[in-house]
Image (cartoon, rainbow, N blue to C red; front, side, top):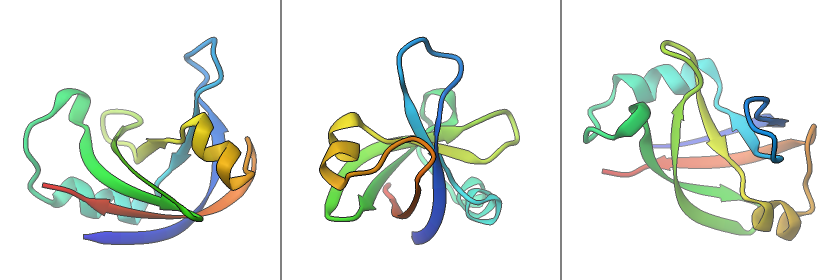
Length: 97
């Protein structure tokens, strides 16, 4: 399944380093939770992501036990796309089996 949405980039507070994430909308997260996926650590799901002209494979994982999924946004992607913390971005996420 492929999803597109707008979201704000935020800093993952549990890390000292700057780790930047995007939160998937609740309705998208619920649909992904309901899909069958191979078992993976931390409830993660493999995805292909598009942000601007950048496309990469990564994993999303639940922010909390029943919370929305979050997506890490690598520094190289942020630099290539000219985005930073607090920016609203349009993201495409495709779940992989």
